[in-house]
Image (cartoon, rainbow, N blue to C red; front, side):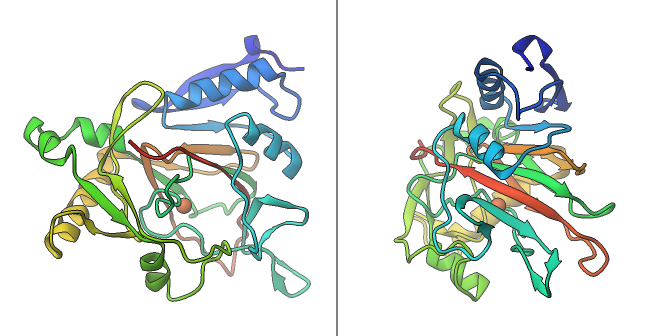
Amino acid sequence: MASIDDLDIRPLWEGFGVEVLGVDLATADAATQDEVVEVFHRHGAMVIRDQSLTPEQQLTFTRRFGEPETNPGAQFTIPGLQEVYIISNKVVDGKVIGNWEAGQGWHTDASYRERPTMCTMLYALEVPPEGSDTLLSDLCAAYNALTEDEKAAYDGLQIQHSFRALREMQGRKSAYGEEDLDDVVHPMIRTHPADGRKALWVSTGTVKGVIGMPNPEGLDLIERLVAFATEPRFVHAHKWRVGDLLIWDNRCTLHRGTKFDLDKYVRHVHRTWVKGDRPV
Ligand SMILES: [Fe+2]
């Protein structure tokens, strides 16, 4: 059984993210798993290499972070495990077995909820040899790069996030089987509960405007800030390997997928989500 002494933790990118080696999550003891969780809270993103996880084992590890989100009524979950969502373009018996268009456009997961998803965990079973990178932007680095005047101007602003706006933009019903949700209001500058670091917590897709600021001014501001926060200096591209478990912290990152050749390659990933707190 792997223990805490076997953990090999390295910076994954300059100032953001860690790579974890030397741990088999399927057999690691509770102390080792909790140390991994602890490290995660301070680094924004984590890739744990060379895993071999059943959906049940992924879910067990997910529970070390908190309560998993379920996907009630969703078409693409593991039978009997509503917490494990299948992102895949794989065809079995003439049918695609997962949601294959997940994750376009810069966003933070489920920001339309009062308690948005704390972290997202993707476990790669099959990956294309090219394309399908996951891009992560470091919203704390983006916040730190603002001028003092900008920080003062944005601290205290609030953004209206809307599930309905997202659905309208997508032109279809939610893939996660969610009912209509009322709009919610979250701060533009979000404080991380682990260590008080601040993030420029903007997003796209769910965003309807800035409270107290008429549109288009409000939406223009958000668009400008998303463009700023996703400048190449803040963005890290994760190149997938089979067996990678990538976890990102939705409290301080934006993410998006890149395209790949759907006719040529298979991408097959199991996703779990952990419930979060109300942003402050
Ligand atoms: Fe997402």
